[in-house]
Length: 364
Image 1 (cartoon, one colour):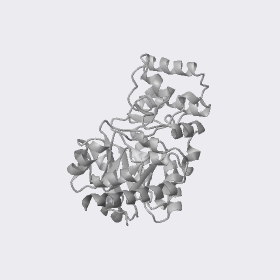
Image 2 (cartoon, one colour):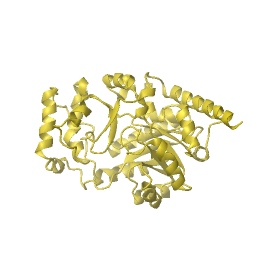
Image 3 (cartoon, helix red, strand yellow):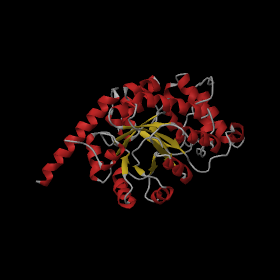
Image 4 (cartoon, helix red, strand yellow):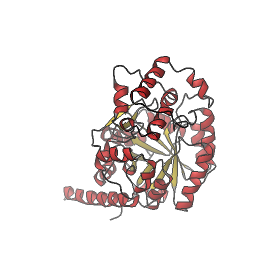
């Protein structure tokens, strides 16, 4: 029994399984396992994007892969940390200093992942150019879908994709000319919206018309994939599924590996304390502290990035176990061991085939 859709056949992949990861190794492994790997490059400098996309290309040859950038509107014009810091309220700085003192966090040896540069139009322009000048096959927009960027990507033959979390996002994506939509439900890790996957996907499929839709959020097994296809999706988009893989192990602090293994379906929380945007992550002392009555409301992006970026880096650098955390979707409850990407993909495909064959009995 084959497992393909019109979209997977159009894109030249064997299975309609799209995998998002921040690891070159994971992205390449997903593509080599007959899926579609997509590299999350939002926190990478333009020159790093050039190098890393070239490395993926070297690993996968002519097989397709993509890159994802977060391009939210309203970001500052320049990459100026000083300008952002000058506007951060004293209340927020004092709260962070209180966390540093309470958990005895030494200073970081350098900027954190969120403070290496400021999320700004200046940085975004360089990142976009790096992607468009590369041989990557797909340009995905995790947040935002600027029409001029979509147009440039399509003009040079790159497939364009946008993640959306509500039906009213469809019109903006359609006007921008996006070719594939990812309907990402509340279950998803990292940046996520308020509508559950089971409610969202059929609605997006119905209203998207001839734009193919992928289902995201809570997809962890072949039964989820079969359900997504039954709801009209042309495939699935997974991120959490690859966190506990051999290829991703080196990108995780050992404490995070244990927390991810131990996490159940209810052990994640949505917080704005990470970046200013909604962000689903494993529940730890970090999220609990920001939920306390004494905590100020998180700032909008990129102000929250600058407020906590160095501290987040210091937490992992100095092994501050209670505060160490990872983004993850509710589907993390289905994963409790570290396995190769190829094995995860093989299981997903077999489970999907079994689920689809099992459904035939209802039509007899």
